[in-house]
Amino acid sequence: MEQLDFFTVPSPCVGICQVNNRGYCKGCYRSRDERFNWQVMTSDQKRQVIRLCKKRYLRILRRAKGSSIEVQQVDDNPQQSLF
Image 1 (cartoon, rainbow, N blue to C red):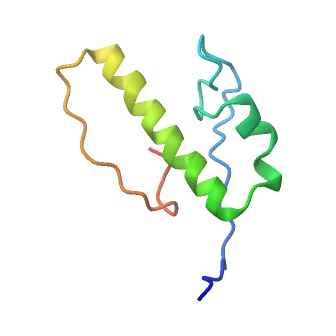
Image 2 (image 1 turned 135 degrees about the horizontal axis):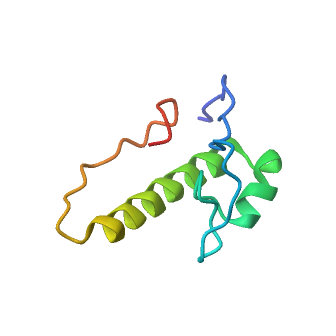
Image 3 (image 1 turned 30 degrees about the vertical axis):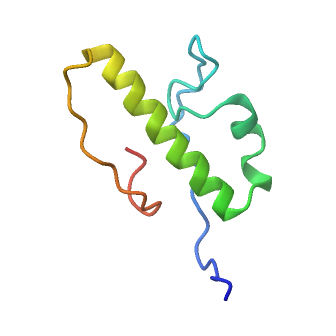
């Protein structure tokens, strides 16, 4: 059975459109391709990109604070805020 999408997945863009040294946006942590192709992605693809962005954010946060920080599990619910 196919699940119907009643709501669109909002863009994670926060208006900080600068790229870090790895090529990811400093505001939303999407790659160039992910940003440019957002409008043509399916809802499942958008949710997957948001999951990847969360992982990138947590990885950068751990690096900034050192490996001693413990990060709690982040929900995969796309209706909640990005972080």
